[in-house]
Length: 379
Image 1 (tube, rainbow, N blue to C red):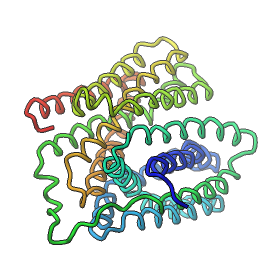
Image 2 (image 1 turned 90 degrees about the vertical axis):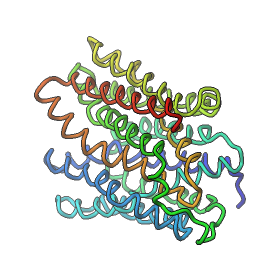
Image 3 (image 1 turned 180 degrees about the vertical axis):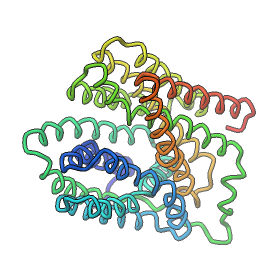
Image 4 (image 1 turned 45 degrees about the horizontal axis):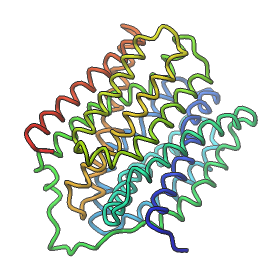
């Protein structure tokens, strides 16, 4: 079966985020219903960022070095599908923890490898990367809403069978992604070349800071909505409104970046997310939160695609996945490990709203770092 490059990227993101929407928002709710304590759930939730921080870059580098990107991506998908299926059986913490540890290990390099493959494919074929990535946001929003309603009626048990089955078309599509041109070994630049680029280093610092803000929102957004009197439907609306708002920004991000330059585009993204969190702090009731989530979604759509483009443009193709993994480590590895404990401390000792004050400070600092890099013509 032959697919055009645009279809390969779009289908990968669509099906990948359909899987995520069916499973990720609900797994910790299921585990809490099994009787796991908040401390145990928190420990399980920390496994993915820890493994991302420890393993994403080494595994991505291994895939780059040996031209195993597609092979490793498919292997990870097969293992993840099996683990999702098996998670319906254990009911005690230790057994669940072993499975979730393996899941965190397997999934640690998948985002960086997939993003690098698809972004490079878009670059080679002169395609709109954001136009492919937006299908992921659409898939996640629709999936979370639809499966949330289904699990509410039928319970969580079918989630594990459905979640594992959704991996099957994803495994197939992953095999259709283009590995990219082969680089002769003695023509490779050393991986240390990535860290000699001061622009990339400053981008990673800014990405970590903005990742702290994003992690605070993901962790405490629903809790804050409950604090203001919102229910489960309103929390779902926050997720859906934000995800749908990402779509136009991802679609037009190529044009925006060409007109404004990628670094300026990411700074604008920080500004939009900052305005969203200012709104979170100022709203008197929970009902307004979904509308400010639209601003957050607009910013996230520009932020994610702008970061991927900046790294794709500035790094050699032989280290494509390794470079993207560094973004993943900053955003989804180190940032959540800092944001979770610090945000929890601020939530308990100051107020739930003050958590978003920290998010604003993080974004302002991230914008300052990128502005310095852009002024120095490093990005």
